[in-house]
Length: 452
Ligand code: TYD
Ligand code: MG
Image (cartoon, rainbow, N blue to C red):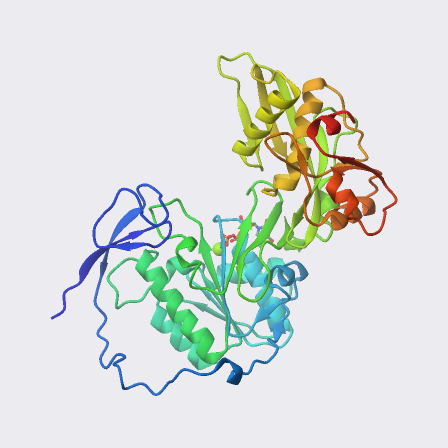
């Protein structure tokens, strides 16, 4: 009889090893290995050379049709997906517990059911009663939608084959398990097995499948990151649970571009789309306050205006305190070092707090110049005029470099009533049409600071 064997998996990236290791050689994280028992699956008559009927094909013989997209009925989600759901694709929606994944997908199910599609919602977390209560909050279901509360992979596969839906939601991957395997639900091997099975069902029967995955503390159960390479599309739902705004970010997309974002607001009756995020993010902005500047960041193809606030004050501690919310802490430290070295600011004895308003997280280098200006504005206690928008990447020599999408950024700012723009000089020279706005091109941060 074949014995089950013990293997170790990295819970962060899914790397497999026959022995325990302190550090994962693949993703370099520490203490992420977990032990799991894997029962050998008896595969009689597996692939043997010389027996297969499939053969390689010439690429010119492969025919493709234009992928048919199905609209989810939620414009923000369609955009993140690249125009809608692709038939036969497998998508993963990750995020912290309680962020709104189930709510979003139930809304999608409702829209698709109302549009006449056959929909199956499988939940391993909630009872029919709970789902019904949630469904009543988010609105009316005009047509039928199938609900199934089950955690066994076999039962779910059978239900899918029997009811042959066009769209399936699996909520959540961490609760599903295959009885033939000895490891617990949510372990790396189970999560992979369930995903693999869903992949086969999706491809063979041309069903669009959405899988929900909670992002959990590393080491406890396998997070969605272990599956990213298996699925076609990966979306992450971000945001503070306390704040109303939620950002849906496309991290991987085999059928469209990544880095697109969708902005939602959690209301009493489900998630609402935020159609004009720039306007929402700038709501309640202080007027004529030092340390506050508005930057423009490109999120995918879409420019978003956001306020950056900085507070610089003499420290009363031995070690100055520095915090960054919504932007990279190391980037803020680097930009402060550039200000010290290239402009001569005495920031060494100051506490520095840099915040991004609205619970957003930005990683684009184009906001560098905005961060520099916010810090300088607070340090000198001089306000940046409120109708000014700033963008540009800052280098270690203090130079301001060109960024992509200059026109789109300026247009968005113009739409929201901004009249002045501090931007890289190199960007200014490439503009095709001159906007109705005062443009101030700069080549280094000294020139930019002259506008304070
Ligand atoms: P949920 O979608 O269950 O989150 P997840 O599936 O990601 O764990 O729930 C999100 C939270 O949103 C929950 O705490 C209740 C709240 N909520 C609302 O504020 N309004 C609503 O209309 C609904 C359905 C939920
Ligand atoms: Mg849920």
